[in-house]
Length: 184
Image 1 (cartoon, rainbow, N blue to C red):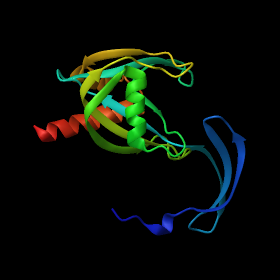
Image 2: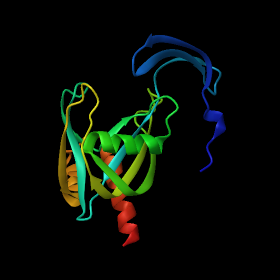
Image 3: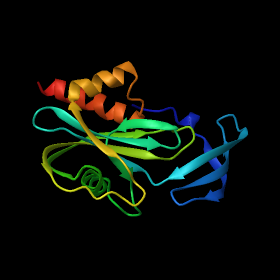
């Protein structure tokens, strides 16, 4: 698709006003197509990956954890932050192993998504992992989660009913469903 380049917002200035362990906050000024200068505030994030593990019986492995920002328990695909210089596929393999103890013999890219593009730079790379082998989990310090195994169709129904609210999980399940339907 060709985009209308006249809609481009040109950055005029950027000031980092917060430097955290995981992200930065920047106050920016941008020039609009009508030459007006506007303020923008963005969160700068290195990006991440998420993995939808699917076993031979058509079950998915999700993780259940408490998410402080959402102030609730969420059911999500295994996921994690890209380390500096890390390739998304390497990160996907690492996160699958850390959070579920699994490795996979078949990987497919399901593309990428912008989690909240109006306010953050984060891009999440989405993968589907099949041909699972099971081993030991090795969670990060301070990471506490349970692995939940359920039929793919049940997880999809939970997306459609609003029980699974995590965006990356919704996108991964819906994209995988479309891909698998197309193959059959």
